[in-house]
Image (cartoon, one colour):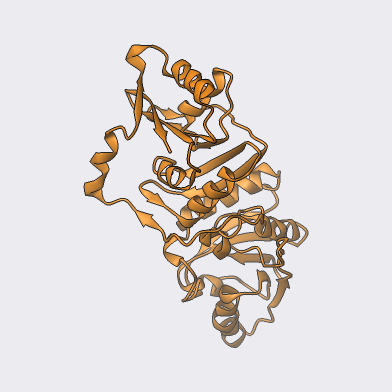
Length: 310
């Protein structure tokens, strides 16, 4: 047989994908292939919020590079049945059993056998299980049931929400008590108010807001960051006892964001939510999910820090 191809959506790169890459690295001529289009099949849950194929491929390549296997494992993206037909000779395909695997096996792999007279071998990996006994899957992450490490989250009934164009201008108006930079360092006054009022929970949304509050010697209960500010990338590396990574593009709030925020707020440990995308709208779930007596802090560009009392 010629080569080994791991076929998967690789959506919300998770612990199950990493197990697959580990197994693939042991195989001859390994290729990790991100599937899309005809190779996905119909009926996947929340298919509209699957990450774009370019994003999935980029995240996969970064992970393979970070674990030192970029000289061992090649990467590809296939979106047509004919892409699999282009692989010469009998081949080993590595897959997890599921809807996409069924589509590929009954479609292009069966066609390869008939038309190319090849004798492909399919190795189906055992699913990685969470502590609740369920499978780790991208669909469960999209629903907000688990995170990419397979940890159970609080869950949510919220659907994906999209900010309409005509609603965006209203976000420029501060929604709480404004601590303006023109009146001096806003973080000093915010931290003093925290000391005076002792909010039940303090949630900081944004890299700059989180960083400046930390510099004043106070660690928020929850920090939500995306590595970006109005001026570009933000180099600060944040840490906390609990860390969650979610995918949430600009102008949307996905179910996994609601669920991760709810989980972090109700965790007794300090929590960090790292957003792959943008955190601009995640202040809304924070306000709605925080217990009464909490404070949500966010940065208003060119103004200062806004304190929303809950």
